[in-house]
Image (tube, rainbow over all chains, first blue to last red):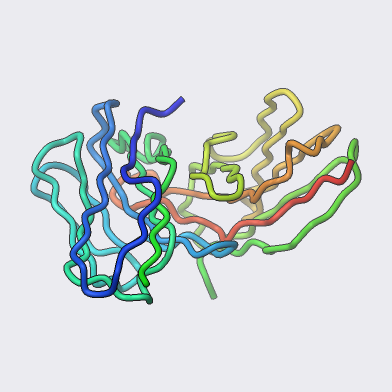
Amino acid sequence: EADIYQTPRYLVIGTGKKITLECSQTMGHDKMYWYQQDPGMELHLIHYSYGVNSTEKGDLSSESTVSRIRTEHFPLTLESARPSHTSQYLCASSRGTSGSQETQYFGPGTRLLVL
Amino acid sequence: QKEVEQDPGPLSVPEGAIVSLNCTYSNSAFQYFMWYRQYSRKGPELLMYTYSSGNKEDGRFTAQVDKSSKYISLFIRDSQPSDSATYLCAMSLPSGNTPLVFGKGTRLSVIA
């Protein structure tokens, strides 16, 4: 079982609030990812990191930001939440030193509802 | 055309049936192929991983890769209601410099 954790698991918050979704892994993986997934829909990569102090935007434009100060920690921040941010956010990590190690391990997800 | 195409379903089968799930891809450089299973409101979990062409079997699951046709399959034998989930294919390049490319996922229901 993958050792990757996300908090909170569920969050209901009002419009305009700043929120931070936490993601931590204890596998020593260099690469970490954030995906957004609406119910029954496909995964959309919004951010990824290949190591400390490295962050990249994914395929889906997002108003969120990320940071990678420690290998094990990859938080995602929304400065001003809006109802359009309502979704499930999934964090993943991979060892990622070659194509064979790109296998990603996912956390349980954070379900966000912005009122 | 998306790099990875996967029929979203839904696919509904009776318990005990053999299920075939498929993905096609356009980038011949993909060499590593994975299948993930995602239960409702959960994160995806890795089911099978294969390298290049050929078959790989794990219990009731068989993953098959046909690189000449750019086609991968996941077979589930003796399907169970607990197999009801969304199945996502994913693939990667040998360089390790780009994230996995996922299919949209196929929703499977196994009816008891």
